[in-house]
Length: 325
View 1 (tube, rainbow, N blue to C red):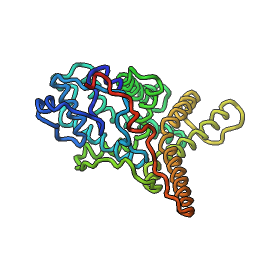
View 2: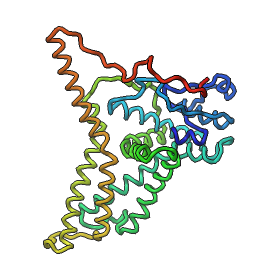
View 3: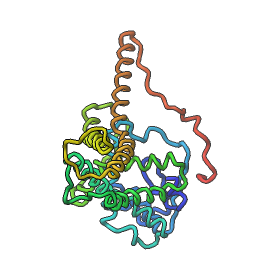
View 4: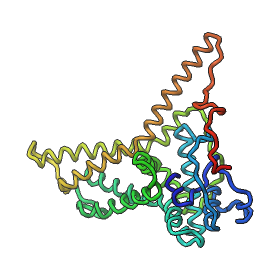
């Protein structure tokens, strides 16, 4: 949001957004036709000449999901809402938006489609390595992979940079990682959004108890990617060693050594990008066990269990900036 703020078109998202009543009335109230009505309303406000401002201040608490299943449900709703917005009217051709705002809104609505070539590249690459022969419907040379996958990933990284150009590199990488973290959720959103399936609006439950089964359901695709890519990389390393003369390769393979090196580098990058959901499940499970043991100890000692306290008490929030007045 800090990156968007530099373009004067910060999207209005979530519980912490505040609308100017006069401006909202002038544009006809909240925009409909999308389950992310706050995001579409901000687009409409910017198209009518109004400016949305992002304040980097701690003013609200407890409005973000802390469990993986709630996080994925929230991202699914956001992605489906984005597809509904672009189906109703492409932001690139929305009158009133300046050039940078057009690109930022366009990327946030259409950018999720880039997950399709990225996933296709991984599936073709790992399937080809494991099969030991070229696949007719996919690229088989190093140059073809650079054209196919490099273009998609490159455009994704460029657009992420345009949206977060004012941020430090750690925030930029975290924003890029978010696209890989929710890859299966984005695929579901594409199927729901473009197939016309109705999806009702429901506020995301922010403070829910840990559900191991629900969290494992959302982390299962990431674990599958680790297993598939791990097996493929094990075979790739063996083929590289065989090519160096360490031992004699007794199976056939059409992969070139430099493409194997590329696949190893891509896999390391991919493992880092999709590491979030498995870690969230592990941390949530460990936190749930700690809370259960603490509750049991308090019950045995006839002491009321302590409730979770905010990191910053409400009365110690920093004062409002002059812009808010």
